[in-house]
Amino acid sequence: MTLNQLSLSLQFGPFDTVAEHRAALPRHKVTRWIRHALSTDAEITVRIVGADEGQRLNREYRKKDYATNVLTFDYSQEPVVTADLVLCAPVVAREAQEQNKSLEEHYAHLLVHGTLHAQGWDHETSAEDADDMESYETDIMQELGFADPYAK
Image (cartoon, rainbow, N blue to C red; front, top):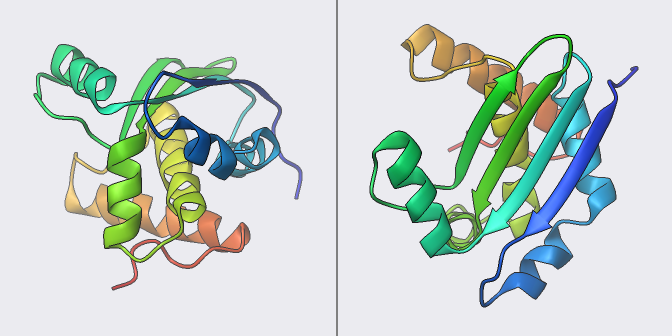
């Protein structure tokens, strides 16, 4: 399998548990996870933030006043994908615990999910689109050695 090229900027905002999240997100793994979800070359910034920054961004850009797990800001899809993925560390940690997943596994899934959004995939347009996206995410996660993220 030939993977597409990725120019990655990995950033961590200031928040209390930043060391735990840095440990779960070594650059080589983040690169691998994203590259497996790419259908073309990409320039992507991944920023891990605290609850305040996550809530502010979600409120400003989606008009939803709460911190969400991942926000995708996609700027172009051709000739390369350019996007910012913003993941809210406290939300990711809480969800990982609730879903009995490791922090690493949940980050991998959300990075794959956000990368697909950056390429035009959308699970909110129809049930069929949601099923297609979930199926593709599951395939990618299994290629990466993780379980089906949607298994009950």
